[in-house]
Image (cartoon, rainbow, N blue to C red; front, top):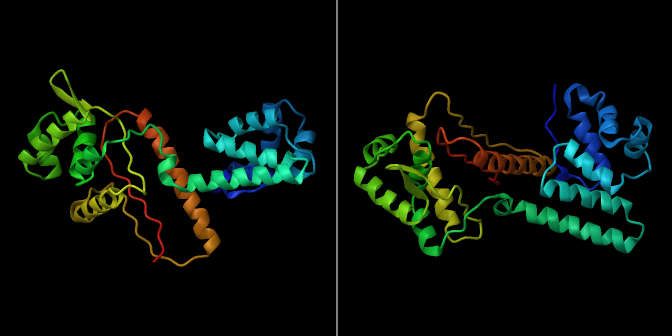
Length: 272
């Protein structure tokens, strides 16, 4: 059975991270050291000495290993910081890298900083856009190309046609929708409201209210999961990191995919 892929941000030692990554591979990582050695152009013996002994990985090899492991962007930079800290010859330099690691981990904990390709909205536009779930719903449904008129959007969302018309006019003026060959198409592909924004509370509340209303008529294939639980503090931290990794992956993959359907992802990991 394949274990959950570890997050590099959970580790202070790059060797421990690599070993955990290997253990999480199929068949408990059998043969992975050989694959790593081949990827880095090193002998299997030397790779074993590095990850099970005192020898350290060079930064060039660390960069190649990060690519081999599928790390990207900030993950690569964090991994290189871990390697740099381990290679530091003086206490002062090691402490400097530890500070950088701490700052990188703190920055990562802010979800808004993990979202790429975002569009910053003006306060006036944001106030209207986040006043209800309807503008975002219409924008995402229009992007699929399946709803070409106000009536079809109104029927899909179970709202008044006049509300759709007014919202579409707003989205067009804000550049979030465009008209192409007489049809509505998506304009700005992505927007994000940070947790520090005055509109954040409205945004989260609107979609949770919408989700609660939707529970009565949800489709058979929809996934709804609610599970109050008690667990260790350490496991709670690990699960939070895993959820952040999911958010990062979703935000990276969605802009590259075709707009064929509209979904809303709600993730809550809060203390009771």
